[in-house]
Length: 174
Length: 93
Image (spheres, each protein chain N blue to C red):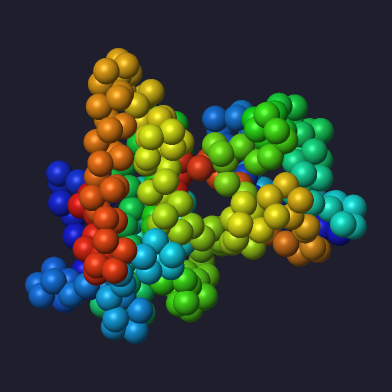
């Protein structure tokens, strides 16, 4: 189902089971991933498009998510102006062992640009010195002290989230 | 040999053409491709490479969907029919 929480920048497509029964879609063949497995294997196909295009694709992907052929999808509610992009980005999540099957679905729905990215790569971009975090800080015009606080928060959050590599990964609030 | 190149979201570099079919020599690499594109889009190579001649962390090159950083970086060999996608790194979620 499409989950549109106005307070979030992202709109999600997740199984109804996740919303109603806290089904953990970050799994491989039903087995939830540990923090270590998440960092090593979880990733996404990136899809780019205008807001209307990604919205239409989200509607087409929704049944596949309900069937659990695709674990989850998220996309930008609007362009992030700080990033100077002229397209919304959609992330179609899955384990790397199933990424070819997921790509086949995307290709059948007309997606042409093939771009796979691991979640660890994205997380690294949001750490101090990472391209996303630094660009975000720059875009917000934060002063040195504010920027350092943001960097420290990012570092602490990452450390806390992955402190025990054998714990089941519990997700990132977005 | 022919390589299809898609330059996604590169408006910030002032590159207007987003899809290119580029004829490359045999044994071409990502570095060869960047050099060929730069001939028609001056500044492309400077923007997409870092000081040591590697791929700039500001951009990601996908060769048939795989990040070139996890292949052989600038030395990644290209084959006829390959599809190369270039996106700003910031676009990855």
